[in-house]
Length: 76
Image 1 (cartoon, helix red, strand yellow):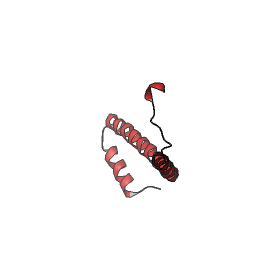
Image 2 (image 1 turned 180 degrees about the horizontal axis):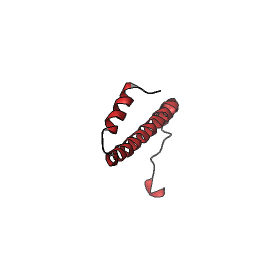
Image 3 (image 1 turned 60 degrees about the vertical axis):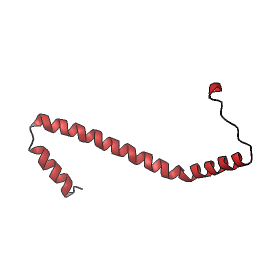
Image 4 (image 1 turned 90 degrees about the horizontal axis):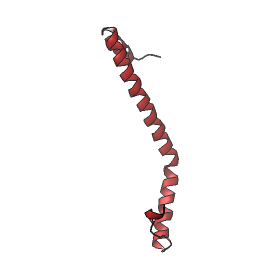
């Protein structure tokens, strides 16, 4: 499936010298891989968001009940 936007980009790239086409293709590959990585993180965050909310509520409750203690970073 090819959209008009993709066809336009391909046409523009084809008008460039081959060495520039290769450079543009490399940049596009990196950009697309970054976008895919962001989509994975967004999906992962959406799947765990309720767990994070629940953990924050438990922590807040433990603090209010005096059950929480400060983390000693020197002992990590």
